[in-house]
Image (cartoon, rainbow, N blue to C red; front, side, top):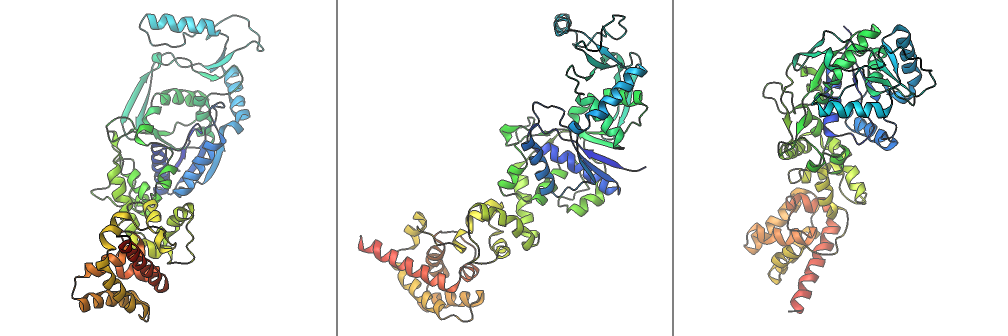
Length: 471
């Protein structure tokens, strides 16, 4: 059997966390089996679909490197195909025209609700003998079977059954002539030869309707797998109040796509006790058999832990490619300083996100105009002048300029003055970085550079002198 899956988002908003997980599961299932993956944009909601949302979906898929073999297909470009199928169904009697007015349908709905019944169409026009003309306002409805049931073996949840008596004759073409979502999906899955539909559990109620239409068309029925929802840290459905905005916001916040994918794949799927998965690992091990039926809970701390892991375990050059985006966004010019891959090695242990790393690396490239107040008050005092002057002299004559020689200069100063390393290192740290926090002073001073470090020590000494003069 040829495996072919699809990801079919509606461009009515940003690509969200749950959507990416669905895309990832569909993509992995096809890649694991050597099959094909289709990207389809379901833009039949003409009022809410936007070009901005389409671009956000494409940007997200590309950022995650979830490539597709076919598409992107757009449903709005396939209306002729859908209407051709609908016309055939009208001829065959598997669909019919419904002329019921909005007034009648509203009254029917109100009556059913008053009686405690589930609102549903009553089939008034199903076998009507009224002679209406085709140019009168009408919709087209699918003639759903009225007996028996629809059963399917969900690849995650097991056997599921719906009684046909609880399914009404849904509209497949609106009054304005546009086909509806549930119908377009069916024709698309048929035409694109989709073998497995992997999607969120909110689509379970659509599945029996779609299966009945597929059977009426004489089309093969794909396998279905419905993934459980993702809950927020508070146990409630993930939403904007949990920060569940577009996934590209996670890029903006400094997360690596590799970390996010690793986190997402584990939100409902497992492979033994393994926590860290490369994309190749995922493709090798992924199956639908070990996806949980239960909802998964989002955990920000776990995501940050994974991101920190990837920052420190991926090749620094790869991380640097993503860091460059953040550095550029902050307007930091990196030509006169260390390579970004070296920044990753220097700051990786300290930073959980690339945004934090970009914000922390500025002193390697640019001059700062102020010392951090608390750090300067504590470490740039008159007592620090002698250590700073002594280490300055050693750094100025250090050759070649290496981290090892920088370390010798700092250690040598401490030994000569008979003080601890902190008495030299902390004033030096504040002098050359402007802050009280940085990586080891040997690698930090080396990366800042010899001439720039000397210049900053001189400025710190001038700062101390000015403060002392002011009393």
